Amino acid sequence: MIRFCIAALLIPMTFATVAQDEHLKWAGHVALPNGQQMPLELEVFKTPHTTTANVRSPAQGVQNIPVTAFRQTVNTLSMQLPTLGAALQLQPNNEGCLAGALNQGMALPVELCPTQSLTHDDYLASLPEGVTELDELRFQSADGSWLSGTLYQPVNQPQAPVVILSGGSGASDRDGSFAGKKPYRNFGIELAKQGIALFTFDKRGVRRSGGDYTQATVEQYAQDIQAAYQLIRSMKAINPEKIGFVGHSEGATVVAMALAEVNADFVISLGGVGLNGIDAIVLQDKTESMARGASAEQAEVLQQIAREYYAIVLNAPDDKAREQQAKAWLASLSEQQRDVYQQYGADTYTLAVDNVNDKALFSILATDPTQHWQRVCVPALILNGDKDVQVPAVENVAGLEQALASCRHPATKVKMLANYNHMLQPTTDGNIELYAELPEGFDENLSTDIAAWIRRLR
Image (cartoon, rainbow, N blue to C red):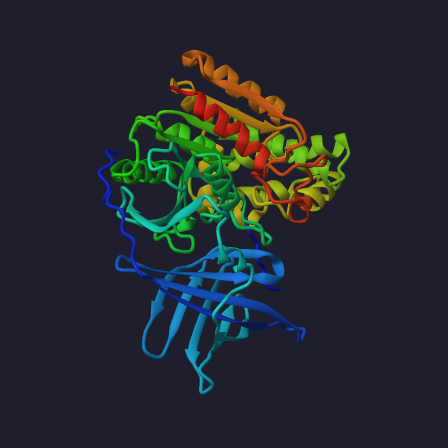
Protein backbone atom coordinates (compact mmCIF):
# COMPACT_ATOMS: atom_id res chain seq x y z
CA MET A 1 0.00 0.00 0.00
CA ILE A 2 1.38 3.42 -0.90
CA ARG A 3 1.56 5.58 2.25
CA PHE A 4 1.32 9.30 1.72
CA CYS A 5 1.58 10.19 5.43
CA ILE A 6 2.02 13.81 6.12
CA ALA A 7 2.60 14.64 8.92
CA ALA A 8 25.08 29.34 18.46
CA LEU A 9 26.42 32.61 17.28
CA LEU A 10 24.57 33.47 14.18
CA ILE A 11 26.61 35.03 11.36
CA PRO A 12 24.51 34.41 8.25
CA MET A 13 24.84 35.76 4.75
CA THR A 14 22.36 38.62 4.93
CA PHE A 15 22.23 40.07 1.45
CA ALA A 16 18.98 39.65 -0.44
CA THR A 17 19.52 37.67 -3.63
CA VAL A 18 16.74 37.94 -6.19
CA ALA A 19 17.66 35.67 -9.09
CA GLN A 20 16.04 34.27 -12.18
CA ASP A 21 15.34 30.71 -11.10
CA GLU A 22 14.99 27.73 -13.34
CA HIS A 23 11.71 26.13 -12.28
CA LEU A 24 11.09 22.81 -14.03
CA LYS A 25 7.67 21.16 -13.76
CA TRP A 26 6.32 17.73 -14.60
CA ALA A 27 2.86 16.24 -14.11
CA GLY A 28 1.61 12.71 -14.59
CA HIS A 29 0.69 9.68 -12.54
CA VAL A 30 1.83 6.68 -10.56
CA ALA A 31 0.22 3.35 -11.48
CA LEU A 32 -1.25 1.60 -8.43
CA PRO A 33 -1.44 -2.20 -8.01
CA ASN A 34 -5.24 -2.16 -8.39
CA GLY A 35 -4.92 -0.77 -11.91
CA GLN A 36 -5.87 2.79 -10.98
CA GLN A 37 -3.68 5.82 -11.56
CA MET A 38 -2.91 8.45 -8.93
CA PRO A 39 -1.85 11.94 -10.06
CA LEU A 40 1.72 12.89 -9.19
CA GLU A 41 3.65 16.10 -9.81
CA LEU A 42 7.33 17.01 -9.59
CA GLU A 43 9.05 20.38 -9.56
CA VAL A 44 12.77 21.15 -9.53
CA PHE A 45 14.19 24.54 -8.54
CA LYS A 46 17.68 25.53 -9.68
CA THR A 47 19.29 28.65 -8.20
CA PRO A 48 22.86 29.99 -8.03
CA HIS A 49 23.14 28.54 -4.52
CA THR A 50 21.33 25.22 -4.52
CA THR A 51 19.07 22.81 -6.38
CA THR A 52 15.96 21.60 -4.58
CA ALA A 53 12.91 19.57 -5.55
CA ASN A 54 9.36 18.95 -4.41
CA VAL A 55 6.79 16.22 -5.08
CA ARG A 56 3.02 16.73 -4.95
CA SER A 57 0.07 14.37 -4.64
CA PRO A 58 -2.83 16.53 -5.92
CA ALA A 59 -5.60 13.99 -5.39
CA GLN A 60 -4.74 13.84 -1.70
CA GLY A 61 -4.34 17.59 -1.32
CA VAL A 62 -0.64 17.18 -0.49
CA GLN A 63 1.42 19.95 -2.05
CA ASN A 64 4.74 19.45 -0.26
CA ILE A 65 6.47 16.07 -0.04
CA PRO A 66 10.06 16.82 1.05
CA VAL A 67 12.90 15.54 -1.13
CA THR A 68 16.42 14.53 -0.05
CA ALA A 69 19.41 13.02 -1.88
CA PHE A 70 18.36 14.69 -5.14
CA ARG A 71 20.59 13.61 -8.02
CA GLN A 72 20.39 14.60 -11.67
CA THR A 73 22.60 13.37 -14.50
CA VAL A 74 22.20 13.45 -18.27
CA ASN A 75 20.19 10.23 -18.23
CA THR A 76 18.72 9.89 -14.75
CA LEU A 77 16.92 11.81 -12.06
CA SER A 78 16.65 10.25 -8.59
CA MET A 79 15.60 11.32 -5.11
CA GLN A 80 14.49 10.07 -1.71
CA LEU A 81 11.07 10.89 -0.24
CA PRO A 82 11.85 10.24 3.44
CA THR A 83 8.44 11.13 4.87
CA LEU A 84 7.00 8.35 2.69
CA GLY A 85 9.85 5.88 3.13
CA ALA A 86 10.11 5.93 -0.66
CA ALA A 87 12.51 6.63 -3.52
CA LEU A 88 11.74 8.03 -6.97
CA GLN A 89 13.92 7.12 -9.95
CA LEU A 90 13.24 8.51 -13.44
CA GLN A 91 14.75 8.54 -16.92
CA PRO A 92 13.83 10.44 -20.11
CA ASN A 93 11.77 8.42 -22.59
CA ASN A 94 11.22 8.82 -26.33
CA GLU A 95 8.14 11.02 -25.82
CA GLY A 96 10.09 13.73 -23.97
CA CYS A 97 8.67 12.65 -20.61
CA LEU A 98 10.19 11.05 -17.53
CA ALA A 99 9.47 7.39 -16.82
CA GLY A 100 10.55 5.19 -13.96
CA ALA A 101 9.34 3.93 -10.60
CA LEU A 102 8.28 5.01 -7.15
CA ASN A 103 9.84 2.42 -4.84
CA GLN A 104 7.94 2.02 -1.60
CA GLY A 105 8.06 -1.62 -0.67
CA MET A 106 7.28 -2.35 -4.32
CA ALA A 107 8.12 -0.63 -7.59
CA LEU A 108 5.17 1.41 -8.85
CA PRO A 109 5.44 2.66 -12.46
CA VAL A 110 5.58 6.43 -12.88
CA GLU A 111 5.32 8.68 -15.94
CA LEU A 112 5.65 12.46 -15.72
CA CYS A 113 5.56 14.89 -18.65
CA PRO A 114 6.65 18.55 -18.81
CA THR A 115 3.93 21.08 -17.97
CA GLN A 116 3.60 24.84 -17.67
CA SER A 117 1.44 24.82 -14.54
CA LEU A 118 0.77 22.58 -11.56
CA THR A 119 -2.37 21.97 -9.53
CA HIS A 120 -3.48 24.84 -7.27
CA ASP A 121 -0.96 27.30 -8.75
CA ASP A 122 -3.57 29.62 -10.26
CA TYR A 123 -3.30 31.79 -7.12
CA LEU A 124 0.03 33.09 -8.45
CA ALA A 125 -1.69 35.01 -11.24
CA SER A 126 -2.13 38.38 -9.55
CA LEU A 127 -2.08 40.45 -6.39
CA PRO A 128 -4.79 42.87 -5.26
CA GLU A 129 -4.31 46.59 -5.80
CA GLY A 130 -2.07 48.18 -3.19
CA VAL A 131 0.00 45.05 -2.54
CA THR A 132 3.35 44.09 -4.02
CA GLU A 133 5.64 41.11 -3.43
CA LEU A 134 9.38 40.63 -3.57
CA ASP A 135 9.76 36.99 -4.51
CA GLU A 136 12.69 34.62 -4.03
CA LEU A 137 14.56 36.47 -1.32
CA ARG A 138 17.33 34.10 -0.29
CA PHE A 139 19.36 33.94 2.89
CA GLN A 140 21.76 31.55 4.55
CA SER A 141 21.11 30.03 7.96
CA ALA A 142 23.70 29.17 10.60
CA ASP A 143 24.39 25.67 9.23
CA GLY A 144 24.95 26.94 5.69
CA SER A 145 21.53 26.00 4.29
CA TRP A 146 20.07 28.48 1.81
CA LEU A 147 16.42 29.31 2.44
CA SER A 148 13.99 31.17 0.20
CA GLY A 149 10.93 33.30 0.86
CA THR A 150 8.59 36.07 -0.26
CA LEU A 151 8.11 39.56 1.17
CA TYR A 152 4.60 41.03 0.86
CA GLN A 153 4.55 44.82 1.12
CA PRO A 154 2.05 47.67 0.93
CA VAL A 155 2.66 49.79 -2.17
CA ASN A 156 4.48 53.09 -1.59
CA GLN A 157 5.08 52.43 2.12
CA PRO A 158 8.80 51.55 2.26
CA GLN A 159 9.05 52.14 6.03
CA ALA A 160 6.11 49.91 6.91
CA PRO A 161 6.53 47.57 9.89
CA VAL A 162 7.61 44.05 8.90
CA VAL A 163 6.66 40.77 10.55
CA ILE A 164 8.65 37.59 9.89
CA LEU A 165 6.54 34.44 9.97
CA SER A 166 7.46 31.03 11.35
CA GLY A 167 4.99 28.39 10.17
CA GLY A 168 3.50 25.48 12.06
CA SER A 169 4.74 21.91 12.26
CA GLY A 170 4.90 19.73 9.19
CA ALA A 171 6.37 20.32 5.74
CA SER A 172 5.12 23.89 5.53
CA ASP A 173 6.02 26.11 2.60
CA ARG A 174 5.92 29.90 2.53
CA ASP A 175 2.22 29.85 1.63
CA GLY A 176 1.20 27.35 4.32
CA SER A 177 -0.19 25.20 1.50
CA PHE A 178 -2.69 22.46 2.26
CA ALA A 179 -5.71 21.11 0.39
CA GLY A 180 -5.49 23.89 -2.19
CA LYS A 181 -5.45 26.61 0.47
CA LYS A 182 -2.70 29.19 0.98
CA PRO A 183 -3.29 30.68 4.45
CA TYR A 184 0.13 32.30 4.92
CA ARG A 185 0.01 33.92 1.50
CA ASN A 186 -3.49 35.13 2.32
CA PHE A 187 -2.18 36.49 5.63
CA GLY A 188 0.64 38.37 3.89
CA ILE A 189 -1.75 39.96 1.40
CA GLU A 190 -4.28 40.93 4.06
CA LEU A 191 -1.61 42.47 6.29
CA ALA A 192 -0.11 44.39 3.36
CA LYS A 193 -3.56 45.82 2.63
CA GLN A 194 -3.49 47.08 6.22
CA GLY A 195 -0.06 48.70 5.84
CA ILE A 196 2.04 45.90 7.37
CA ALA A 197 4.68 43.91 5.44
CA LEU A 198 5.15 40.17 5.98
CA PHE A 199 8.09 37.91 5.13
CA THR A 200 7.33 34.20 4.89
CA PHE A 201 9.70 31.47 3.71
CA ASP A 202 9.76 27.79 2.84
CA LYS A 203 10.73 25.67 5.82
CA ARG A 204 14.18 24.09 5.51
CA GLY A 205 14.08 21.10 3.17
CA VAL A 206 10.74 22.15 1.67
CA ARG A 207 10.29 23.32 -1.95
CA ARG A 208 12.80 26.12 -2.67
CA SER A 209 14.66 25.95 0.66
CA GLY A 210 17.70 23.76 1.13
CA GLY A 211 18.49 21.58 4.13
CA ASP A 212 17.01 18.30 5.32
CA TYR A 213 13.45 18.58 6.59
CA THR A 214 13.55 15.17 8.27
CA GLN A 215 16.54 16.14 10.43
CA ALA A 216 15.30 19.60 11.42
CA THR A 217 14.74 20.56 15.06
CA VAL A 218 12.97 23.42 16.80
CA GLU A 219 16.37 24.89 17.60
CA GLN A 220 17.31 24.95 13.90
CA TYR A 221 14.02 26.60 13.03
CA ALA A 222 14.85 29.32 15.56
CA GLN A 223 18.22 29.83 13.86
CA ASP A 224 16.41 30.11 10.53
CA ILE A 225 14.18 32.87 11.93
CA GLN A 226 17.22 34.66 13.32
CA ALA A 227 18.85 34.51 9.88
CA ALA A 228 15.66 35.82 8.26
CA TYR A 229 15.73 38.72 10.72
CA GLN A 230 19.28 39.61 9.67
CA LEU A 231 18.20 39.49 6.01
CA ILE A 232 15.24 41.82 6.50
CA ARG A 233 17.22 44.16 8.74
CA SER A 234 19.92 44.47 6.06
CA MET A 235 17.48 45.71 3.40
CA LYS A 236 17.80 49.45 2.80
CA ALA A 237 14.07 50.10 2.40
CA ILE A 238 13.21 48.50 5.76
CA ASN A 239 12.92 50.39 9.04
CA PRO A 240 15.16 48.36 11.39
CA GLU A 241 13.17 49.55 14.41
CA LYS A 242 9.88 48.05 13.19
CA ILE A 243 10.67 44.37 12.71
CA GLY A 244 8.72 41.74 14.63
CA PHE A 245 8.00 38.01 14.62
CA VAL A 246 4.78 36.09 14.17
CA GLY A 247 4.59 32.36 14.84
CA HIS A 248 1.77 29.97 14.06
CA SER A 249 1.36 26.83 16.19
CA GLU A 250 4.85 25.34 16.68
CA GLY A 251 6.15 28.49 15.00
CA ALA A 252 5.10 30.49 18.07
CA THR A 253 7.57 28.51 20.15
CA VAL A 254 10.20 29.02 17.46
CA VAL A 255 9.89 32.82 17.49
CA ALA A 256 10.00 32.92 21.29
CA MET A 257 13.26 30.95 21.13
CA ALA A 258 14.64 33.22 18.40
CA LEU A 259 14.21 36.29 20.60
CA ALA A 260 17.08 35.05 22.77
CA GLU A 261 19.57 36.06 20.06
CA VAL A 262 17.98 38.95 18.14
CA ASN A 263 16.26 42.15 19.22
CA ALA A 264 12.95 41.99 17.42
CA ASP A 265 10.59 44.80 18.37
CA PHE A 266 7.47 42.71 19.02
CA VAL A 267 6.18 39.15 18.79
CA ILE A 268 2.84 37.58 17.88
CA SER A 269 1.69 34.06 18.77
CA LEU A 270 -1.15 32.51 16.76
CA GLY A 271 -2.41 29.21 18.15
CA GLY A 272 0.77 28.94 20.21
CA VAL A 273 1.54 26.30 22.83
CA GLY A 274 1.70 27.21 26.53
CA LEU A 275 2.39 23.75 28.00
CA ASN A 276 5.44 21.51 28.06
CA GLY A 277 5.83 19.12 25.13
CA ILE A 278 4.27 15.97 26.59
CA ASP A 279 1.40 17.76 28.33
CA ALA A 280 0.59 19.70 25.15
CA ILE A 281 0.47 16.64 22.89
CA VAL A 282 -1.41 14.48 25.42
CA LEU A 283 -4.03 17.22 25.66
CA GLN A 284 -4.14 17.40 21.87
CA ASP A 285 -4.73 13.64 21.73
CA LYS A 286 -7.77 14.13 23.95
CA THR A 287 -9.35 17.03 22.10
CA GLU A 288 -8.64 15.70 18.60
CA SER A 289 -10.02 12.25 19.39
CA MET A 290 -13.18 13.70 20.93
CA ALA A 291 -13.65 15.92 17.87
CA ARG A 292 -13.53 12.70 15.81
CA GLY A 293 -16.22 11.06 17.94
CA ALA A 294 -14.41 9.50 20.90
CA SER A 295 -16.22 9.46 24.23
CA ALA A 296 -14.66 11.11 27.27
CA GLU A 297 -13.77 7.64 28.57
CA GLN A 298 -12.09 6.64 25.30
CA ALA A 299 -10.17 9.93 25.20
CA GLU A 300 -8.90 9.30 28.73
CA VAL A 301 -7.73 5.82 27.72
CA LEU A 302 -5.92 7.28 24.70
CA GLN A 303 -4.21 9.85 26.93
CA GLN A 304 -2.95 7.10 29.25
CA ILE A 305 -1.54 5.21 26.28
CA ALA A 306 -0.02 8.37 24.83
CA ARG A 307 1.71 9.55 27.99
CA GLU A 308 3.60 6.27 28.38
CA TYR A 309 4.37 6.16 24.64
CA TYR A 310 5.81 9.70 24.64
CA ALA A 311 7.92 8.90 27.71
CA ILE A 312 9.47 6.06 25.69
CA VAL A 313 10.14 8.44 22.77
CA LEU A 314 11.98 10.84 25.08
CA ASN A 315 13.83 8.43 27.34
CA ALA A 316 14.93 5.49 25.15
CA PRO A 317 18.74 5.39 24.75
CA ASP A 318 18.77 4.98 20.96
CA ASP A 319 16.58 4.46 17.89
CA LYS A 320 16.61 0.67 18.07
CA ALA A 321 15.63 0.59 21.74
CA ARG A 322 12.99 3.26 21.19
CA GLU A 323 11.28 1.26 18.46
CA GLN A 324 11.48 -1.97 20.44
CA GLN A 325 10.10 -0.39 23.61
CA ALA A 326 7.29 1.40 21.77
CA LYS A 327 6.19 -1.77 19.99
CA ALA A 328 6.37 -3.73 23.24
CA TRP A 329 4.22 -1.13 25.00
CA LEU A 330 1.59 -1.19 22.28
CA ALA A 331 1.63 -5.00 22.23
CA SER A 332 0.96 -5.05 25.97
CA LEU A 333 -2.28 -3.05 25.69
CA SER A 334 -5.53 -4.62 26.75
CA GLU A 335 -8.14 -5.34 24.11
CA GLN A 336 -10.06 -2.19 25.09
CA GLN A 337 -6.93 -0.06 24.96
CA ARG A 338 -5.90 -1.56 21.62
CA ASP A 339 -9.30 -0.76 20.11
CA VAL A 340 -9.05 2.86 21.24
CA TYR A 341 -5.49 3.17 19.95
CA GLN A 342 -6.36 1.69 16.55
CA GLN A 343 -9.40 3.92 16.16
CA TYR A 344 -8.00 7.23 17.39
CA GLY A 345 -4.21 7.02 17.73
CA ALA A 346 -2.55 4.71 15.22
CA ASP A 347 -3.14 7.02 12.26
CA THR A 348 -1.96 10.23 13.95
CA TYR A 349 1.48 11.71 13.41
CA THR A 350 2.51 11.61 17.07
CA LEU A 351 1.25 8.10 17.90
CA ALA A 352 1.98 6.25 14.64
CA VAL A 353 4.72 3.77 15.47
CA ASP A 354 6.40 4.42 12.10
CA ASN A 355 7.24 7.90 13.44
CA VAL A 356 8.67 6.79 16.78
CA ASN A 357 12.21 7.86 15.76
CA ASP A 358 11.10 11.05 14.03
CA LYS A 359 13.46 13.84 15.08
CA ALA A 360 10.80 16.52 14.83
CA LEU A 361 8.51 14.55 17.16
CA PHE A 362 11.33 14.17 19.69
CA SER A 363 12.08 17.89 19.45
CA ILE A 364 8.43 18.83 20.05
CA LEU A 365 8.09 16.52 23.06
CA ALA A 366 11.40 17.68 24.57
CA THR A 367 10.61 21.39 24.30
CA ASP A 368 8.92 23.47 26.99
CA PRO A 369 7.76 26.68 25.27
CA THR A 370 7.02 28.42 28.57
CA GLN A 371 10.73 28.54 29.41
CA HIS A 372 11.28 30.72 26.36
CA TRP A 373 8.18 32.87 26.83
CA GLN A 374 9.32 33.68 30.38
CA ARG A 375 12.21 35.63 28.85
CA VAL A 376 10.07 37.62 26.40
CA CYS A 377 10.02 41.27 27.44
CA VAL A 378 8.98 42.93 24.15
CA PRO A 379 5.29 43.61 23.35
CA ALA A 380 3.51 40.31 22.72
CA LEU A 381 0.15 39.58 21.11
CA ILE A 382 -1.25 36.15 22.03
CA LEU A 383 -4.23 34.93 19.96
CA ASN A 384 -5.78 31.44 20.18
CA GLY A 385 -9.02 30.25 18.61
CA ASP A 386 -11.60 28.92 21.05
CA LYS A 387 -12.52 26.11 18.61
CA ASP A 388 -8.91 24.89 18.36
CA VAL A 389 -8.69 21.13 19.08
CA GLN A 390 -4.97 20.86 18.28
CA VAL A 391 -3.80 23.52 20.73
CA PRO A 392 -6.82 23.94 23.04
CA ALA A 393 -7.11 27.61 23.92
CA VAL A 394 -8.05 27.61 27.61
CA GLU A 395 -5.12 25.55 28.88
CA ASN A 396 -2.50 26.93 26.49
CA VAL A 397 -3.47 30.59 26.85
CA ALA A 398 -3.32 30.19 30.63
CA GLY A 399 0.18 28.73 30.33
CA LEU A 400 1.36 31.54 28.06
CA GLU A 401 -0.08 34.23 30.34
CA GLN A 402 1.65 32.73 33.33
CA ALA A 403 4.96 32.56 31.46
CA LEU A 404 4.71 36.14 30.22
CA ALA A 405 4.02 37.45 33.72
CA SER A 406 7.72 37.30 34.61
CA CYS A 407 8.60 40.07 32.13
CA ARG A 408 5.29 41.32 30.74
CA HIS A 409 5.40 44.46 28.59
CA PRO A 410 2.55 46.96 29.14
CA ALA A 411 1.50 46.63 25.48
CA THR A 412 1.15 42.84 25.68
CA LYS A 413 -2.34 41.58 24.87
CA VAL A 414 -3.83 38.11 25.28
CA LYS A 415 -7.11 37.13 23.63
CA MET A 416 -9.14 34.05 22.77
CA LEU A 417 -10.77 34.39 19.36
CA ALA A 418 -14.41 33.35 19.23
CA ASN A 419 -15.21 30.74 16.57
CA TYR A 420 -11.74 30.21 15.09
CA ASN A 421 -9.95 26.87 14.75
CA HIS A 422 -6.24 26.07 14.82
CA MET A 423 -5.77 27.16 11.20
CA LEU A 424 -7.42 30.47 12.08
CA GLN A 425 -10.43 29.62 9.95
CA PRO A 426 -13.82 30.93 11.08
CA THR A 427 -15.89 27.96 12.27
CA THR A 428 -18.04 26.61 15.09
CA ASP A 429 -16.45 23.14 14.81
CA GLY A 430 -12.69 22.71 15.27
CA ASN A 431 -12.48 19.15 13.89
CA ILE A 432 -9.29 18.90 11.81
CA GLU A 433 -11.11 16.79 9.21
CA LEU A 434 -13.11 19.91 8.27
CA TYR A 435 -10.10 22.12 7.50
CA ALA A 436 -10.21 21.44 3.75
CA GLU A 437 -13.91 22.35 3.53
CA LEU A 438 -13.75 25.65 5.44
CA PRO A 439 -12.97 29.12 4.06
CA GLU A 440 -9.37 30.32 3.82
CA GLY A 441 -7.82 31.08 7.21
CA PHE A 442 -5.91 34.16 8.39
CA ASP A 443 -8.73 36.31 7.07
CA GLU A 444 -9.32 40.06 6.87
CA ASN A 445 -10.85 40.30 10.35
CA LEU A 446 -7.84 38.66 11.99
CA SER A 447 -5.36 40.71 9.95
CA THR A 448 -7.17 43.95 10.79
CA ASP A 449 -6.91 43.26 14.53
CA ILE A 450 -3.22 42.35 14.26
CA ALA A 451 -2.36 45.38 12.12
CA ALA A 452 -4.17 47.71 14.53
CA TRP A 453 -2.18 46.32 17.47
CA ILE A 454 1.12 46.75 15.61
CA ARG A 455 0.29 50.33 14.65
CA ARG A 456 -0.40 51.19 18.29
CA LEU A 457 3.15 50.21 19.25
CA ARG A 458 5.43 53.19 19.50
